[in-house]
Every structure is written in C-alpha cells, then in structure tokens.
Image (cartoon, rainbow, N blue to C red; front, side, top):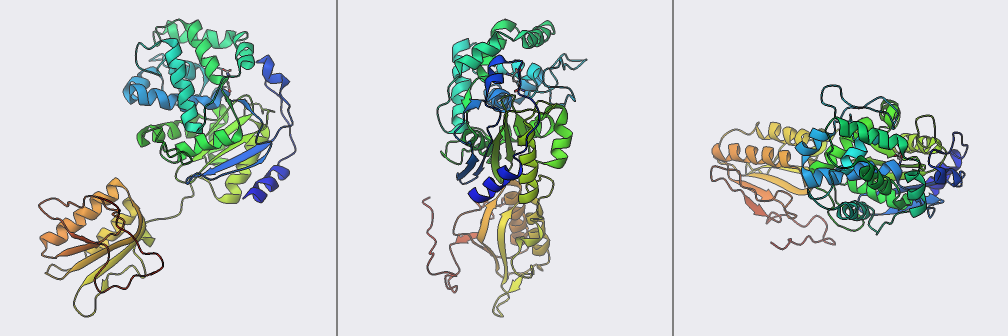
Length: 432
Ligand SMILES: NC(=O)CC[C@H](N)C(=O)O
C-alpha cells in the first residue's frame, strides 16, 4: 500500500489551479505540498508524500459539524433549518429554498453557518458550543485538534460574504442569534488544523458507521452517518458534485485550504492534500488522485459486488445429512436483505415434517437487522411446519434468536459429530 500510494502521487504530480486568496493567510501556503492517506476500517492508516504537513480543515468540517448537530438536536430539528438538496451553485452562494427560506444543504457556506448554530444543547454558551465542535472533530480524528489562530484572524477580517449569508438566513427567521457571532464561530470551526492522517481517520469513522476504527470510540450513531454520507454524496463537492459522484463515486468533502476527504461506506476512508484549487474550489490534484484511487481500487459506490447469491456455501442447495433426512444449510459472509432472501428461498423448499434442519452460521461474519428478522421468520415457519431446528453459531452472529410464537431454535457451537474444521483455531464462546 505505501508503495502504491507513492506511485499515485508521482503520477498526479502535475498541478494547475490557484491558491484560495480570499482568505489572505491561505495564499501564503506552500502550493507544492502533496499528500495522501488511507485508513482501513480496522484502523490501519497508510500515508505518502507530505503527510505531516498541517492545514486548516475549512469546509471539510461541514459534514462532521452537521453530524454533531444531528446527534445533538435530532433529524427533524436539523431538517427544519437546513435542506438536503444539491444547490448546483458555488459554495459561497446565497442558496436558499424559495418556499421555506432554508439553506439548500449543509455542505455550502450558507447551510454550514446555519448548522453551526444547531450544535450543542439548546441554550449552551458560544464557548460551550465551540468546545463541542472542537472535541467532536477531535473524536473523529482520534487526537486533540486545535485552531490555527492566524488563519482564523485572517478569515475573520475578510468575512463580509459569509456575514451577508448569515444575515440572509437571519432575515428568513431560520436563526435567532447574532449573525456576526455565528459567522465568527463558524470561521473558528473552519480554522481547526489537521493533516491527511487526521482526515482519513475522520473519513474512516464515517465509513465505519460512526465507530472510529483506530480508537474504538463510538462517535456517532449509524443513522447519523448514513444521513451525513448521503448529503456528502449529493452536495459535498459543490457544483461539481454530479461529476464527482459519477467519476469517483465516493461521498466526499473538499476544503479551500486544499484538503479532500472521502468516505466509502463499509470499506475505507481517504484524504488528500494539495493547495491549488480548480474552478469549483476543489483541490485540483486532490480530485485527480481520488479519481485514480477509485479507478485503481474499484472504490466506486455504484459498483458493489453482489452479496446475495454467494451466501449459501457450496452449490447453494440444502445438503442432506447422512441418510438421516437432516437438511443442512451452510451460510457464509454478511447476511443482509439479498442474502437472507436467498436463504429463505432455499428453506421454503423443505417439505413439512419432523426432520431436523441445521443452519450453520459459523462462517457468517455479520447479520444486519433485516437479515436477522428474515432468517428468524424462516425458522419460525419451519418450526410451525413441525421441524426441530439447530443453529450452529459459535460467534453468536444471530443474537437472541427468538423467532416469536415461542419458537427458539437450539444454538450450539458445533454439531456433536463435526470435527473442528481447523483445529489450530478453536473458537471460543463469547462471554454471555
Ligand atoms: N470551501 C471552503 O472550504 C470554504 C470555507 C471557508 N472558511 C469559507 O467559509 O469561505
């Protein structure tokens, strides 16, 4: 992986675009810095290039602060103030919905300024709210992040446009606090300092359903992650969001200091840094690196492998036992809707009767809620047809297998007549 990342940086070294200069301090950045990092969902981070270079998070803070607002106030309260439609406009436009006056989405400035006002418990002080933002961003990154006071002061002195946006939102009655204070605090949020390792850890936390894979800390509930990733996918790259989703296919967010952060749900978090920006305000080389990573590593959200058909091991047919009429299905991988449907279709071929049905889950890695409910419904119906059922589930991937109607299958670690498949790796029963 490190060699590959070096190779990608080499291939994307040519640069074009301009430094953001509407924030004077950003114009003094070294424009040639280039870095990439990638974090797996078991917490391994790979980095290449100027990975120790620090820069301000800028707009990449927006999805994370949106997440904190959702966690603190709930979906309805946040949706009342900020929409979820791509604006098709540049990041600093006055993009308000005509009918409601809401900012169109939380990834553009006008929506992000509004979102900042929703963080923390209602009535908290400005300082408490900012500490919630700072410590929240830090939890995503897995280390304590701080504000770059120079960039903060520099942007604060040139914040007329954001002030205009905040006054527009205020005039529509969406915020009730002083717009000047809100812009100041939003600007402070944008001035938090990160490097590419931080950003890729933050991205990996989103990709991992809210659990920081490096620290093991649960930062968000999965529903918040899903909401944030959906809005990133449609709005994260501003008026280039459609091109980005079709060419890269990774929910992502860029910042004017030159960072890009991308989170591919269930797979990986990644980040790039290169300060020169394209006409949309996205890092030029960062966009090219992400395109390449996506292409090389097959990271496009819309090209997921089929998981359903392979969930039944072997030919997929029920395996008849040693002439004793036992029906046995060996399941493997992740059981979500598509896999559970496949399992149910197979179980439905079993004629009513009193033969034993064995469902072997010892090779199952994960069962989601719908997979669990579907498998349990299959068990319930088999039981009503007269079959005793045994679940081989040494890892308890199917927690609390209560199928309703008083049906509770027998759960065993392995069948009595089964030799352990790999004596070197004896499974132990988790503490109950
Ligand atoms: N695109 C960005 O990164 C914009 C963030 C910047 N702080 C601003 O509000 O203008």
